Image (cartoon, rainbow, N blue to C red; front, side, top):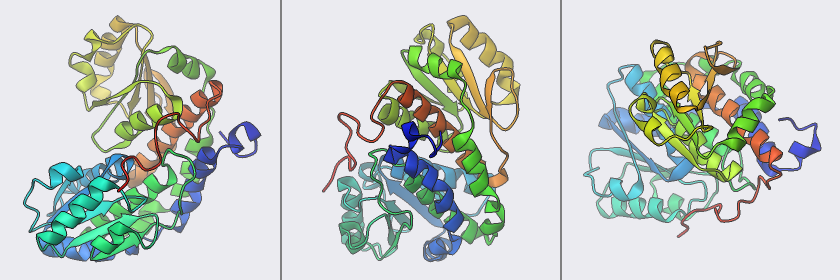
Length: 335
């Protein structure tokens, strides 16, 4: 996709996806220092939010903390379930672009009632109910999005949450981000083979497989919003443990950075089921592969943008209004 062709440029969704490049370029990792300072004191950090405000932002940050072996207990949970937990010793970071998401406000108010003064917010708007319910709130710099499907805000939320981990660890996130905007632009604009688009359009179900860092799961959600097609997230090697029983011939699985030791197993399982396999990786694989630039510690963001690119191509091919799903709303459950 690109902004030079009106078939793409006419949609806010594409404009906002491409706006991710500048959003990343302007991001200042120090913006989350106040949450990091609290997390270092408590040793416990809970991320909460609903949908896209939680899936990749929280899970990507949690994976980074565990990969580094950071001495920080990082958890994530939806608001209702988080309310069941004793969070009195936790720093809690709650995300809601609108600042009006019912479930998130419920958790913020619950923490207030229980006397937790380490409750922090993350929104895309100023003067919201969530900001009023939190001790301190950071407002995203990317601005409010017009398309129903959240895109550049997801990336900025993810950077904010991940920057907490970098700040707790005392590592230089700016150095890791050098060159990332250009790599995201490459992933957003690389050509997608018409064969892949046709496979998606012919599938009864579109599957995304990958690590539990929110990337494949977020793409699963965006598939519903952007292409109006059924999708399912297969965590880790879940795809190799029985799901083929219900897969139909002609379905498609996008595997984000497939595990090399499982290549043969993927070929056997999906081949026997008559399922198309497309890998999203930094190198060629035995499967049809969308090869993206290497970005080191920031690789998940490149994979996400490549996935968006695929979904836009499918939506455009189907002449779908990318900005306005028929049923989904911008704010899923508003207070």
